[in-house]
Length: 548
Image (cartoon, rainbow, N blue to C red; front, top):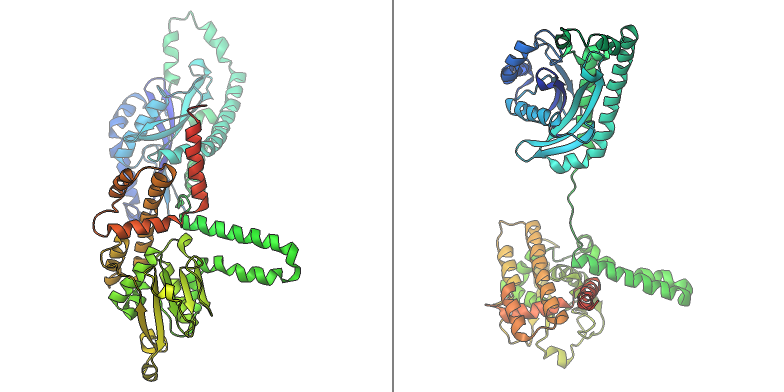
């Protein structure tokens, strides 16, 4: 943890002073191990401003000093992380010295909790944030028979320090209670030998009374506790506190709210589970096999990449591979029909090739817009599926082949190329592709999403992983536009003029405007029921609130 722990003391002669400080040096250290002695020696220079005053005023006692100037300090090394924990009276760096000095002064003067004993939090971005716990130590020779101390933890991370409050409070109180109990035993023994309260009452009328306590004003903490290894013990406690506090909390990347694809997948899985549960009682023994067969629809959406690897023989490996095999112009026509929501029909004798093409093309759409029948012996209407795989002998109805809302990909085997094919996985060596459609609209203007995707696919410097992430971002961008348009047009019921203004604001107008609008309307069908229900409930709640 990037923090620092210090023990501070309020001296009756000199005010707040830092007694003991433990800091963590993370590897690689600014100074190599061979220069450790030099780094420790720099402390005398860093604290020169305060050291001169202390030597002038506190030379007769050790109340404002923990370790002598010749002491090298304490060093502990964490074998797991390589972090070194250094303890001395003052921090190693001059910048930290001023920060700790200010924290010390504030913790023993203005930043004090009620009763002057307990925890408090203060600080700012410039000087760091401080968790401070003030407490009293019994001293038979002090004014009021007690001296004022504080333990402060200084860090620049405010959130981390606040989240560590219960942990710090619990363990610092153990250290404080240990010091207080040890000092109390010494106090009781000293009072038993020479009660100070009676001696002070008898000396009230003495003319030298005001000068008697000056020689005891800087009594050291070591003498108050009679602990021979006090500073080594505090070094161990503070070092453990820094290590434990740094390892108890870890940062995690939160992915935020679930995407529309995730919500749709959950809804489909829930619907199928409920449907299977309803059939269990009526159909008895055959339920398990049927359940496994129909559940494949949802599982296919989760494991497209894994299934693509399992398909034997020639197959399409990615969108870029499909574009290379079909050609840029033919690929754009096919992708345009997919994005517009038209029915895409593949007719081939190789089901694996059709399945690989659908897996690749489905990545262009939100999950809620995909309705797929991988392979069938008869034609299925467009309302049932927008991806349809057929065997070569299936005839396409006239009303479908003459419709502009469908595209047919006929796949034929090239036997001449097969004999000379070098690789069994080379699709272009095994098959020929013929794309036909009755659509007369130009497909080279839009939609904007397809234009950007083609730029990424044509850039060979981008790997397919990068292109996949680019496509994911584009889909999320346009799905957010779909949500805005749905809320504005369907829920609020705004007019055409207002809707056109929203489309302009969303960047859906201009070149390819008609294609962009068709894409947005088609993608509305892919919104999850959860989102639509939540949106309608929020709107209805807002309408009722004024009357209530």
